[in-house]
Image 1 (cartoon, rainbow, N blue to C red):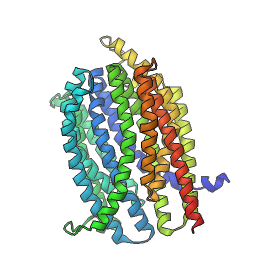
Image 2: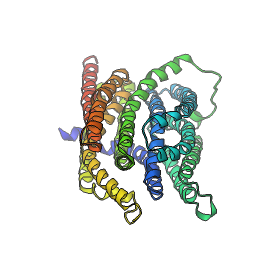
Image 3: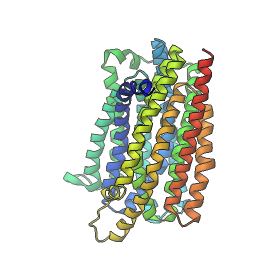
Length: 456
């Protein structure tokens, strides 16, 4: 019985590894930012965390929206319709560009909220100039996402990975030069980290476009766009898939962002510890995202072929693979929970010894909770990918809202701010929300696929 699923592992891994590496690239940049900024002090680390919390919310809407392009391209590819695939990219690019500028504007308008959030004053003062540049970097990032989702829809997951690797090299180099003022460059502190991120994201867009343009197989898809000819039907289709997908990602990212803000109410050390645990959890989450993209592509292809029994088998093979992988990550977090936080702070810094010691202890406690939610988080994001491949987005959006905001957030808020659990209580709420989401989404997938098979 298991061989029905395990025989698909090799292809699932081949499809998802470039996506995982590309997504890890984004997280690795944050990891490098956090380690470099952490050398400046815990206030600077908390400021990057606070600034990024605004950007992550906006980014979740942009990235979530762009995922609408992948199932449309995958279905067109499965049905052998090149015209529909190119149309999905063209209209997706228009919508992603408009969305990128809109989100940048909204972040600028939202900046005064920082003063109302009971965050430490020194942290807010550092976060504001950092936020301006990182917010603008959303424009090239979301345009890049349009090309990335298109490329993945054609089962070509390697090119976005190459672009992300190049961007990482650019970002880390610029960080080193601009944060610390190395080799005669100006010492800009955390603003230098923001500038490095912006430049790297511009490079990323142009590099991916050039890669696709110079390959014969993709050249015609990414050139010769007639942007004067915009079809309302295609725009409506992308929005009907993209808007709920954006909300799904928004609901999840927003609850993790609320954890940053709730931690900030507890103080700068709990906020810095939360940032460390969140950054480490984000890395393992990228494996789930990569497998979720594989599920979206394979389900989308089978939907184009109208082969629903095979669709269900392929999706379940990816769910099984995810479960095995996430158990391994849970074990890694349990075993390494006391060591991982020491990577982020200078343990020999006598001036900040008390703060650093408290942050490391708190982060190790949070990583114990994070070990358990690896499994729930991985499963829910992969099942969500399979549902997007089926182009089922409205009910899953409702499910994610209920799981995170009617179940998870109230638990985080109460246990975090009104019990002695504090930071650990905030993360128990996250674990509960993710588990509820995973269970309800799987029930939805099971129901839909059985119904499609019966109607074949």
